[in-house]
Amino acid sequence: MAIFVLTVVGLMLATSSVNAEQVKNFHMCRNTNCLVYDLFIDPCPQALYNQTCVLPQTVNASIAFKYKPKFGSNLPKTRLYAETFLLDLPFLDMDTNACLYTSCPVIKDTEQNWLYNLFVSKNYPRTSYTVKFKFWDTESNAHDDEPQCCFKFNIKIV
Image (cartoon, rainbow, N blue to C red; front, side, top):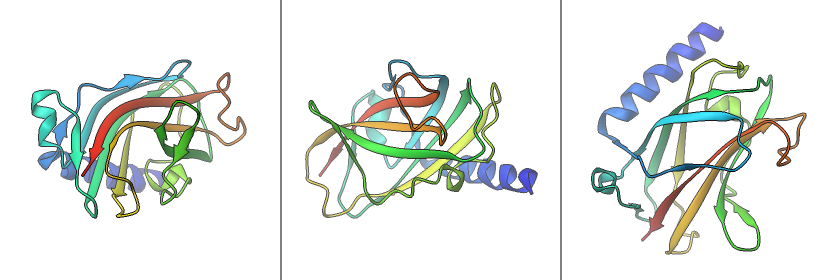
């Protein structure tokens, strides 16, 4: 079953990356315990020019990347946040079950693929965002000193 899930996720990542543009201007969060690379966002033609992705309201955007965690997890949780000065505001439409977007279990020091489809709701204000993409082991509750994978990128909703 795990091999089937890995194959399906890999094919989805490859298919979605064909039309997507590679985003190179992303940054790892402080105290993260993973490597993230080959980040693709579709649609994002602005990435060709190393600019912020512009996403219209009501569009479906795919976020695909490869990662290599320095921790393992049988039931990882995930969340996408809009970073603000005071606190991180979660995108509420995201199911926090990370196994929906990557193969589980998450295996320490093993390259894995991630694919998340974000529906940009009309309820999201039209503005620029620093998006924080984070996942963690359910036993750690995503505290800053616990094992987590986290990176940030910018988008503009229009």
